Image (cartoon, rainbow, N blue to C red):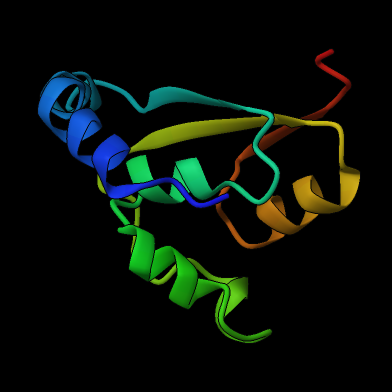
Length: 104
């Protein structure tokens, strides 16, 4: 699953202006539920397109650091059932906080 460009465009149009206003005062708290490897976070927080996310996963070196920085100050918490994916995302700097749990 890769977050599509439509989701990114809707976030940018409807949410990003508000987020940037909040981020002037404090980091924005972002929660990524069932985050797996955080493709949604890469899209909305880092502003990465579908093509850029796919490129990020193209080899075992590129995937260790997002190719774009965060667009705004954020504290990102990921929830997922997989400790491996959460550990990866935390080590790669995509997530700041992790919660491993079954959300079903």
